[in-house]
Image (cartoon, rainbow, N blue to C red; front, top):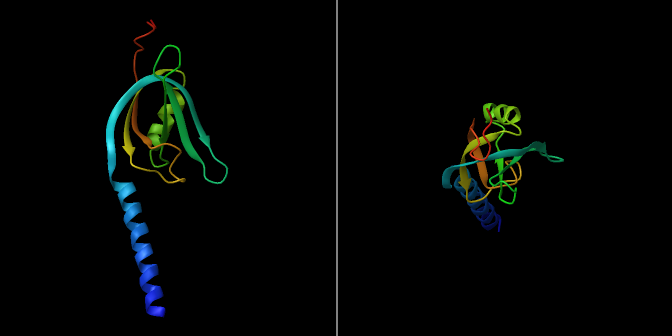
Length: 122
C-alpha cells in the first residue's frame, strides 16, 4: 500500500515539475510592441508583481497589458522613468503564467524610449 502511495505521489510531483519546466523554459512567441506607456504599477496583496499597459492607438482603444519579472530590475527602472512617454517593448509570450510572476502571459525583457508617430515633440 505504501509503495503505491509513493508511486502516485512521485508521479504527481514529476508531472508538476515537468509542467513548471515547460512554462518556465518554453515561450510561445517573441516580439516588439510600441505605444504610449499609460500605466505601470507594483500590485498585489500577498505577492506583488509589476504590471503595465501601453496604448497602441490615439483613442486608447487598443491596450496591451504586460508583466515584468522582478529579476528585470533595469527594465523596471526604465519603465518608471518613461511613464507617459512613447516606448517600444520587447517581450516574450508564454503558454501560461504563475501567480507569483504576473497577471499576463506577456513578459517584457527590454524597453526603449521612441519618438511618437502621432505627435511631433520638438
